[in-house]
Length: 92
Length: 474
Image (cartoon, rainbow over all chains, first blue to last red):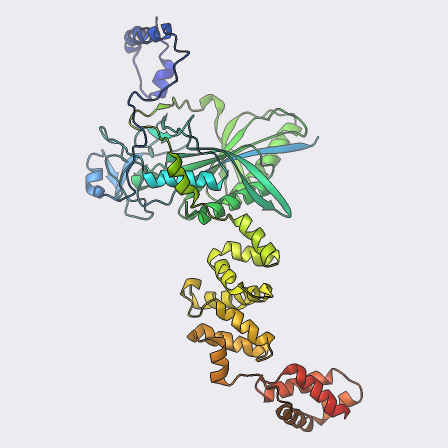
């Protein structure tokens, strides 16, 4: 089973060389095929669940905690200016 | 052919919490860039977000204020997309199990009572704020992760005016409930408009156009009006509309295309593994239900019925809830509450504005307004003197009776004293006196004015009129 990678590549904003695509398509296809096995199970009586942990209502009080300093926050940014994270110019 | 517009609104409202949705960073406008941030809201790896209990409470409260159901199960999902203001590369939101569903908002449109159904109000998070420069853009993540309620209507809106009035009603409900400050200047309310047109009577909907990220209600009204006209024109000319996202250019007063359906996003939603579902308990919901306040429209109707106020007065007391509360205190036990409304609106409100005082810091109690009205109605002071007494009440906080006594403002109703004033006025003004005798009734008003002046406003005007006529005709 081979997977059409073009859509996934576009959504993930990555570029693949034709060689990479040739190598990855069957590999990812195998992964999908493996997961497909789940379809063999009859789950019509099973309620869908979003979590495996039986926890709910985990929350915290609305109390402020200390934030990072601007310097710390920006430390790993490739580029900064005026306290901002610099990114390529956004034009929609 | 006649067309009709079908409009649905998605309104994003920042909740009034101290901290962000998933971390303890301050939910604060105007701080230095990137100072209210931490590993959680910067989307750094390995962090665990924990929901803010207050945001959940405000969401359920909003649900009740909008007549929604609050289901027993809600969960969070990841909405995946890349954009520089979205640090995690996904936005946390509620896709198929939102915190509140199916409600409605009632409001007035002209004389009509309108209702717009609410599909859902779900809890999500705000993104960072971008700044654009010549060669680059910069991002401040202080706003990223601020709790954001998305309130989605059914497509029940049919005009720009209706959209405008719905938004105003929604805003005042949220302000009344203390859910959000709804400060438009601070971007606390933003709106996406979904709009299509179809031939009148046709069941199926036309192609939907979305106008994104509107930050003013009047902008929404103008954009909707423009878009309705544009879409009808395209159809009239035999053209085809395609589903697309458009941008409103407020200066030019037009919309233009941003993207069409072909490059629409594929968000690949899936349940967030880090966030456990929320199952509101009956007890928790009961405590929140107790906090549901009287809504603006209900308040307006009650004020009009209970106190027989005209629409305009009721609107003032709905628009300024503190002033309205004060009026209700003042009107207690009065035969004619409209009098109290007049004092509160015409005199008190003006004074408050003039002196930049808040009604909660007033020096005199609301009951003093009733006392003042009582003094006028009982004939102890004239309505003109009442203005003077009111000014003094406002300045010193003394009771109306005390002020009248201390300043000797009691109305003169002693006929002997009044007759002396009247005779003086007639003697000093023989011309007008003769005019009256020869049948010019209006001349009496002049003489009356002279008496009022001589008595420094304290003479009982009705008695003065009667006395003058008696002397002159005598």
